[in-house]
Length: 300
Image (cartoon, rainbow, N blue to C red; front, side):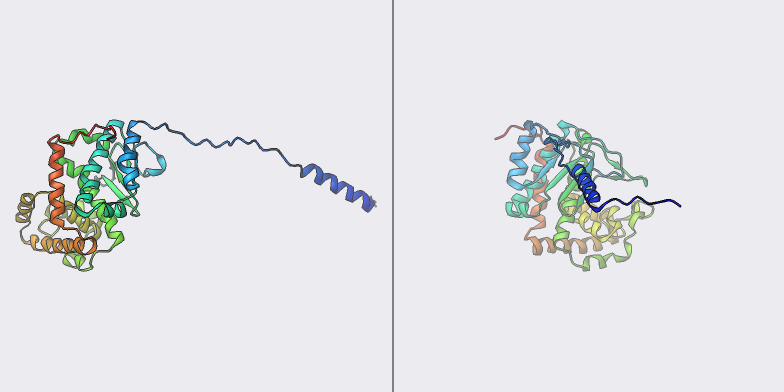
């Protein structure tokens, strides 16, 4: 039979106190944090962005690559420095200052997204389409393919197709998130929305006769509304007339939707859609005619 050793109570208390004394000693922490925050010295472009975007509009224009701002579902690359400067000028002259001129700077400060983020290449989807840009939560517009900008800068149609129309399209989504458009818009071609099948036949090549201004308009009513507005304001009246003739019977549906877009912009934001189109068209011609130096980052 084994015997148990019984320690006096006083000894137990002393042992416990000794353990606490050893285990509860205060350690001196290193005052220097192990976390290192990247510090980037501002260059001339950063200072130009401060003066032209940050200070007047509270807009952050991010051209340096940040993984957290990127879509991890795609392979993305950084935007080149010189191409980023060109894109910043385009956003400023063709979009931000366009709405300043038409709707007033208070409108621009209130509704324009507070961040732009650039990457160098398009985002390629496995269905053969590419993502030119996105709008996130009314606060951020992402623009892809910036490194290809020099290839398209001298042609208005190319500039619109790959960049400028995208910005106006995404900004329309932001406006719709603030004030929704009338439900009557969807009813005009309600049975024609086909989601991801928009880039397949017959939808890809017959969208006009089905009552849609672009093939992508057939994705949903939200995309249809944004396509209607952005296509209208970035093209000339002559282009629009030719397109309506090509639409045949579908022109009536497109024009009915345009009437709703026009009324929405007037009622919700006091913006004349035709004045907006004239301003966008004039400013686009200024760009392709070389009236705006897209490389100048001197602070005036």
